[in-house]
Structure formats: C-alpha cells, structure tokens
Image 1 (cartoon, rainbow, N blue to C red):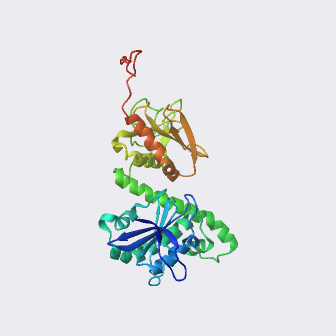
Image 2: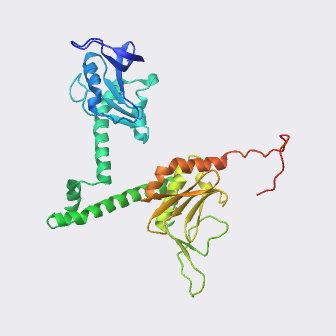
Image 3: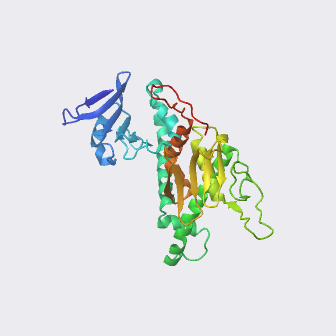
Length: 337
C-alpha cells in the first residue's frame, strides 16, 4: 500500500493520488478517496483517469468509505471506463459480489480472473440498478412495455394513468411472493401454513396451522383469523433473527389487535409485534426495558429495514443475566419469575 502515490503524467509533475496498491513490485490498483457521505460522481475521478493510463494499473477504485466503485478498461485499452464494473455498498451489501471481491484480496489476487469477469459484472450490475429503479418508480416506457402485453387498446394518457398504480402494485406483489417462496424453502414452511383461527389469544402455545372455522352459533366466542400478510411478516422476522437463534425457538401468537412474535414461546421475551389490523401498518419493537415502540412500515418487506433492532432484541435475551448483589457484594437470592 503506497499512500500519496506520485507519478508524472505528461506535463503534470508531482501529482498525487490517495493510494496505490502494488503486487510483485507493480502498481495494480489505484484508489481515490473522498469524504464520507459525499456522493460519488465520475467527475471526482479525474486523477484516476490520468493515472490509469500512466501506470500498469488495471483496477481503479473511487470511494467515500461507505461505497466503493471498481473500474477497469473494458471499453478501450489503458483508458478507464466511465462506469464501474462493480459497486460495493457497505450499507446494503450484495452477497453475490463477495466471490468477486475475494479475487482482490492479498492472499488470492487474480487480476486476469477479475478482468475476465468484469464485463459480465458491469452489465449485470447496471441492469440490476435499472430494474431496482423501475420497481421503485416505473418510468413511462416501462409502464407502456408491460401494459401493451396485457391491454389491447391504444396506450393513451388515460390508460397510462390507470396502469401506473397497477404496475407498481403488481411489482410489489411479485417481489413479496418471491421473498415468501424463498423463506418457505429456507424455513421448511409447508404451503398449507396459510390461515389460522383460534379463540381468544391462548396464554401458551405457538401459532399452529388449523382449519379456518366459524362458530355455529352467536355469543361472545370471537374467532381470530391470522392473515397471510401477518404470516409473511412472521417468516421475515424468523429469517432475520435466525442469525442469533435456531428458527424453532421463534414462535408466534395472534391476538385480536396484533400478531406477536416471541422467543421460546415466552411472553416475557417479546421480539416484535405486527400491527397489521388497521389501515396503517406498524412494526412494534422493544428496547432493553421491554418498552414497545411502533415503527410505521408501508409493506411487509419494510421489516428488513429494522433487522438490526430485531437481532439486538434477541441477543439481549440470550445474554447471561447478571446476578444481583447485596451491600457487601454477595449474590442475593431472588424469587423465580
């Protein structure tokens, strides 16, 4: 690693680039570092462009410490491309990129392998970012592309206005179904685990699949029907906290007003509550004092944004309890709770 690397470029003498990484005595990677939180723009990489053609480097990195953009010379030899072939964002790591990053480690640096894979990585990455943008806020061309495959009439402004929310809703449902299918496969959840009904919320016992029934006569026997959306939320939470505990220890109980997720089927160990029986959805999370805070979410997948909170809650329950001590530092007996 060579900080403040200097190389003469044409008539420019003594210019410095933030870091150069050498391998076997040859500079292989150039790094330009910007302030953290500063957005990365290709205009920030002017020195990378100049140094790229003046050294043996085939890899250039532009970073603000959180996002790392990797460049090479796919479009023209010895000329850095204008678009990165790989983007690593530490706030949202794409695990499919990890094998490619491994090729850049000191122990297994493989430049030829990196360059050969760069073309595919570049275009796949760009396509994924385009798809993500379309899923979030579809452009007119995307709406028209999909609409004309299901609607035979002319694509007028009225039709566009009608189909924009339909495309957005279809995309959300499609992604939900894909996530749900993956979770079912990962957790071994049977397809029949869909509708649940019971009497008033039981004091003990996890949610279990039952037939959806209705009382034969009137009275105070009100049935609680667990929705598919609540089950999806339960599966998401279960998958998130599997990093801390086995999935079998994460159970659920449905109530009239909320769907509760517990550790070890214990009311004293609440992981989260799903407040989905209302127009506005909320995820209930708990602090170290088991005080609940309701966080608004738009869709079930919004639970993923609070994954760290859920994992920390479970980790607190797993941490060994500190013994209470008396005035002289001796443990004191407490009644079992």
